[in-house]
Amino acid sequence: MEIHIISGNRREGYERQFEQLAGCQHMFDVLHLRDKSLSKEDMFLWASQALEMGIHPKKIMINHFPDVADSLHVKGVQLGYGSSSILEVKENFPSLLVGASVHSYTEAKMKERLKADFLILGHIFETPSHPNIPPIGISTLKKVKETVSIPVIAIGGVTVKTLPMLLKAEVDGVAIRSTVWKAKHIEKVLAMLHEKGDDMYV
Image (cartoon, rainbow, N blue to C red; front, side, top):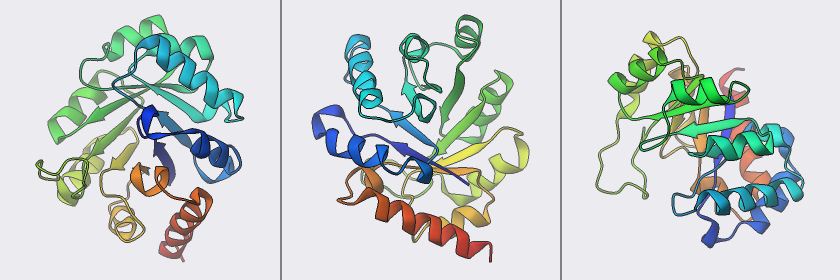
């Protein structure tokens, strides 16, 4: 199971997180740099800081800006509403891994047809970041998993307590924001997630 970490907004602070993540890179697969308020130039500078602080380029996905991801030679780009099309990105930046953010079964099937490399699907559970939007739930996650052939990463309300339900749905990975980004000791949180995941396979 892959662990994807979603950043908070840059203004919320990030140096402590970058420093801790650089020291435990074996414990997560991807760091998504996501801040919708940033310009392309600011995202370039922010991602450059992550690299300068020791996070490996193949651990980093850039949200929304494929040209930034390409210029910094990082793992890939995550596309959402308002982003360039998957086909356009794949044509212009063939070396990038392209993820698509989706919120329903219909969207998931469409993005698979458009050749996304993987999906981030959610929000699965209730989450403070979307207080007025109902979660799509485990049933939608299972339906998507049963019908698409690309990896599905679950997001929204992912915690140590909800992880067993996601693993039973045979999810390919989880994407976590607040649980990790706001933690005082990130490595300890990641260790708990790994331990819970390992227990499921015993």
